[in-house]
Image (tube, rainbow, N blue to C red):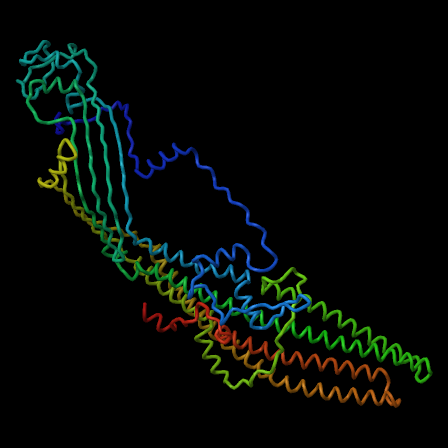
Length: 623
């Protein structure tokens, strides 16, 4: 049957129609084969040990999620943890830092942040990946045959009209193809049902598309459409005795390309790349966040180390003072028994002993709390339980005198502090947001061009030959202009981006000032701690002289036991102050190095975020 016959619907449809995407079809078939999908069952994580790396930490550490220059920390060397004969873990300051960087669970959580941010970077880049697609569709339609101005065609029309063109009934004017024009056919002579037409269409299409940063989108497709039309009644009525080469099936093979180009909004490569650049800045910012957390962790571990050392030293001093008080009390009691001194001297000695025992209890409790905090930060794999004892092997010796100026440390902070580098990256991200929203102020003007070449025949092979040999083609071009009246959304987003950029710039300037104050304060604390070391040592020597003097005076009766107790308390306090002054100096240096951003470098630790970000002016010039 000819495919040019006018076919319309007065459509009393009993149709089975549907365009089924190939992906949906595959999923449906897979579901029929395997049954309904059950929700995945996740096993609960196994309980983690009190200390040492957990199974999850080891899994992450051995995966490709931990990479140099991204989230890995390199220490100078592997440090072994020897155990003392009594089962205590021998711990140096270097080994404490190493254990914290390797096993601290909070740091392990922070190490995955750059991985998460890097995934967003890949997501943004995926917008410009090549996308492959395939589609298959089938539709079937059953309808009545219909001519405009005439109506439906009965199935017995061939019986009414003879092969020689004569009529067996007189009404109905209708020219029949290839036959003489008939006067008319009486509708009462038409007894058959209206003719029905069945159309089947099978379609298949494959192709790919790709977007470019220039605002261009290209799509290339190849397709084959097969159309099958069946109705014996219509053919018998109109085409009996008519010679034709037309068939009931037609295949159409087509290859086409469609190009879409944004001419105004969306056509700027810089604006289109802004989201990718912002994702890259977010990844870099997460590296600076990780570095800042690592510096804070190292500073906290070293501070806990020296605090724990100080409490151990304080316990030793207080234990010695308690022993001295007990000895003095026994001597007083013996002298009271022989009548050398009055009993009124005993209450003061006993009270002094009670006070020293009370101080010793507080010192031991403070040491136990510091030990727990240190164990939690280090997470040492060799620890047995929370009762694991620690033996510190480093003594806070006096460091060299600080000979660098405060201006040098401030200049280091401006380059190396992770929070400043992160703030500069956020400022650059704000500049990119301004660039992106400025492009949104433009109207949208898109150019569409479609070119295609086709081949037609009854079979796919012949249609392919026709595609090569014949000159069937299609071409179209269009322009589309869109612009919202007033463009309130675009203007609001642009003003928001401007305000956000200015806010980040002011925040950066404020943070630079705060960083300078932090460095200067820490530098001043180092100077104070250096002077306190020599001053506390001198005080301790003088208190020793004062105690000897009061003890001699007491022996000859020129001083009371209260005078001796006061001198002993002052000596114990000066001894503790001397040990605290040395520890405070070490902690003050740690704080200074953390404030100027050089703590990890001075400890020989290679960590991500070591390179400074561009200053604000240079970053703005590069956009």
